[in-house]
Image (tube, rainbow, N blue to C red):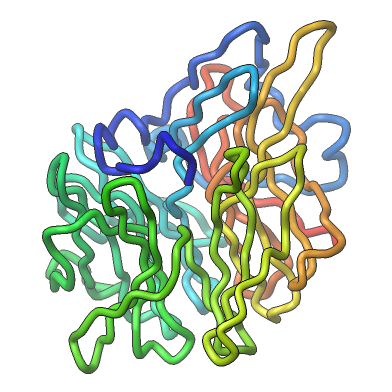
Length: 331
């Protein structure tokens, strides 16, 4: 997360509105589904405007883009369902839609201010963050099928961005304290908390006892780091002066990393920063950009088979309203 996201729950409704992002200098044609650089990517719109999909806030300056990096989109481990965050009647909650048939959505939480969430590896539970005001975010666990009944697992702190470990024994998450952001875990069986390292957006490795996190560097750009718990080694694997990277998501086969990165579009003397989707190999090499639309593409996740990437974008809607989209992963 960037400086503007030190307190991600403050005014979180404003950060998640599925409305047109404030523009300056460059006029964006949101009605276009794809641009020439994206031809052949097989874009498919999953939701409708009546689903009221939340759109993370993006702010821009002459130096770059800053955005809410929390994950608000998820695919069930069996690949059958897409879960997304929806803003309805001034409340944000988790809704689930059939990945193939689409159709009507099913509400899974009945809360006031859900901020982000994740599926458990077996798909039976969902861990989510709820804003409890200006000073606290709490983590909860609920049943993925029935929902509504929730168990609170943290309180009194600014916690967010939860993700289960591969063995479902713990939940990693980020905790904001003053001006620092660090990775913690909650042991589900023993009911205790542990602190690990600094960073945001934790994601566990598929093959090692390690996690991948995002960290801002001295210039304010996000980098992707690997933290190995066995060796204690922490190494930066993805950094680029031209881009800021956040929200790492490991592919189902453990060979690729999916990230959101900032990009600069130039039109004459005008520069316009937005967010696009990138992938790289698990070691940070072979960086590849997949989206180039002037709309913001955010909160990407892999399909269960790794053949597609789901993400949130205003593309394809003249008013710039957000929807969930699916694109083919072209390696």
